[in-house]
Image 1 (tube, helix red, strand yellow):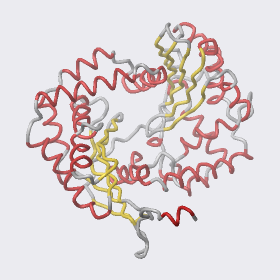
Image 2 (cartoon, one colour):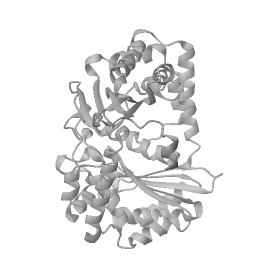
Image 3 (cartoon, rainbow, N blue to C red):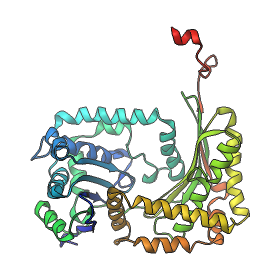
Length: 422
């Protein structure tokens, strides 16, 4: 850690020729309020529109001209700017990333243009029901709490943002004590530290006094809401608030999620898709954050199968509550979970992502051997206990997108030979 509070973490992997570098900010949509929801994500877009040292074209060419890759993302709790380059260009990657977050100019001529771009991104999400339903679902679980806000924001907010709003938010949140620099690949830690010291030109104090403390969400009454959409298929999300990433039940929950809905061998897939043929896509997922989390089940199905699909999902949840899983199924599920984690470590960018997020959440990197040991320690009773705590009927919220097509409009059937020839 540097005197200003900035943390630097790295993993040297000498047998590769690349390096992934990320600058992580401990800020995201949950640090916003209703009137500026979406500003974290909009800033992420706008920093690429020019800095004091580079034009928008020069930013794009800086990394791509050496065969690298430059991008960013915003989530509920974090923003990350990252690059992957050949090891000989690591210093260039650090230079460009710090240029983005320290010297963005937010040019007025691009401000309105980029608002249009992000609004189109929002519309694109609205046209993708299996994506946007998760925003509706989060809203049902967290209500007016910022965790219920969509990361992308709202069209009204996007149109209202001014240059001064972006600069103010940047000055408040983009400070060294709110940052982690993470790198994985063929890089020595001492070299990374020197690069960061060279290009970090914000010797701000370690204090985060200007940053509002995050309020923990409260558990809301479960609800069932339906929305009419101009779509052909019904989309459903069922679930509840779950555990934080620091909760002792983290690994039993991950095991339970793998058992229920992760992959083709999962119970939901085998029952709802393979046995009944009700869905092409059905899965469960968990999203663990600093002080809360989400467990959900998603399915896309025909409108005639909505009620039956919901009942089949709830039946699978009840089954895990009522009867401990067998040792054979538990061992298979844990092997699947461990295998997917280990395979992800073959990706250099994934290793960087793990380093950065772990430092923000835990102030340390949990060794993979320790994680494997904790997964191995999960018992049948642990999985059943988590199911019994989470899958309480009156805690399960349900969001349904129902097709709203004209009565005389039916699904497109097989195309006739004559039609094809025409």
